Image (cartoon, rainbow, N blue to C red; front, side, top):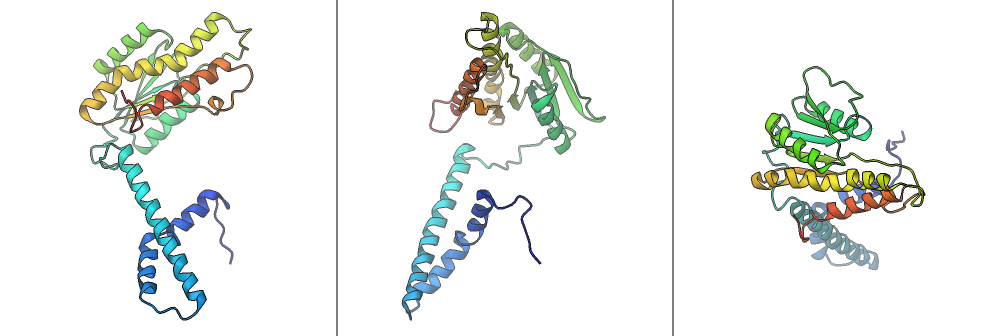
Amino acid sequence: MTLRSREGLTVDLVSRVLKQTALNPWLAIPLSACTAFSVPITSDFARVRLLLYFCTILGTTLRVNEWLNKWSMNNWTRSDSPDWNWAKEVVVITGGSGGIGASIAQQILARNSRTTVVIVDYAPMTWTPKPGTYVAYYQCDLSNGSSIKTLATQIRSEVGHPTVLVNNAGLCRGATVMEGSYADVELTIKTNLIAPFLLVKEFLPHMVKIDHGHIVNIGSASSLFPPARIADYAATKAGITAFHEVFLPGTDAP
């Protein structure tokens, strides 16, 4: 009988297998310890022992690196903190009326139907929340700073302080640099880049105060490989990437 992975042979699959076998410190360290006190009988035995030493050192280094990355990315607190109660979280998703944003909202509600989800979009909702879920919809022009300020105040007073912010809303006008109007460029940059900045300024202070929250910024491959006719969109996504990296440890985080 032949067993095959459903995902096929990929680099990720090979990496997982190696991490659980040859590069697993809990296996490599005991084996290395056993061979360290054994007298080499053949040259092959000596080579196997050296290979075990190499796997032990490499595997241990990788595990320690993963551990340090995990804890530093979570400000040296437990990633599975009991403070995360999805029945009480308030999740704000911009551009959640359809597309990626709607999919994110639906997956969150499928995980826990009691999670409070706030949809912020200029377009009306294209999907209907299931009975028993709480989904609030706010129409807002995210290219307008005053509207964002009003929106944030409404959400805090009517729903509560958000603990998760998903900056997903984005516009793509599809015009070349020469063809696009001033209004096209300004609308794209304000909606895709400035709005996430302003929303983070509104909601991040409370997250920092209670030491609890997530900021999710939706990027795009166009920030690395900009296609024709969407220079403004690609530029905003490159900006979002830089903005998101501000939150990484070791940077001048807000």
